Length: 185
Ligand SMILES: *[C@@H]1O[C@H](CO)[C@@H](O)[C@H](O)[C@H]1NC(C)=O
Ligand SMILES: *[C@@H]1O[C@H](CO)[C@@H](O)[C@H](O)[C@H]1NC(C)=O
Image (cartoon, rainbow, N blue to C red; front, side, top):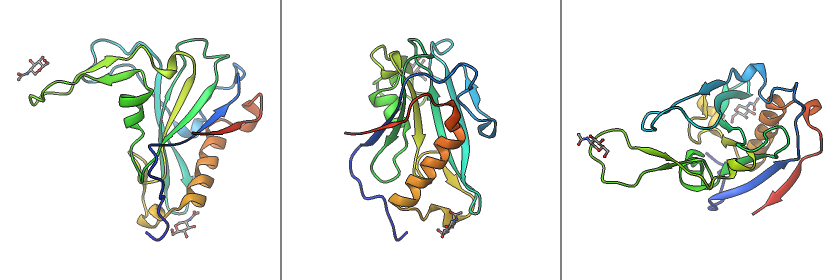
């Protein structure tokens, strides 16, 4: 791996997409073949928010795919912003943001006794006021993978271009009402 993603920051950046996506534009492209996740092991009852997961191919030659969790805003998902969240550090799973930072679920901290760890609802999540697209990026982070090992050899530029491709496939430009704004933390 010659070009690593050197950022030690837990959070690289937020890409805020502007207000509404028109209603007829389903956010997720057909290619993504999203899975609606209605319940999770360790969580009592159905999830009280809408969670979709799926994969998008970002490098056809090497068979690389990025995995995402899309959680729809619990407010007004038609007018609330859509936030793209990527966890920094080299190839950390974005699940850490979902369970420990801004997501609507938290692990219950208790001594491990050999059973499935329990989850609880987190009422102060960003998903109260925005839809959040959590992306395992770059390829090799979390559940994102490459069929050809050469696909893991990505750096800041190539993984950014893959992310752009991912977003374009997921939310075709004609679905976007305003131009994206790029914000840094
Ligand atoms: C482990 O802890 C959970 C949560 O407190 C409890 O429901 C379960 O019965 C425990 N299992 C064992 C094998 O002790
Ligand atoms: C596939 O991986 C190789 C080796 O990292 C890279 O040079 C090539 O650009 C990748 N293919 C695509 C389409 O990105």
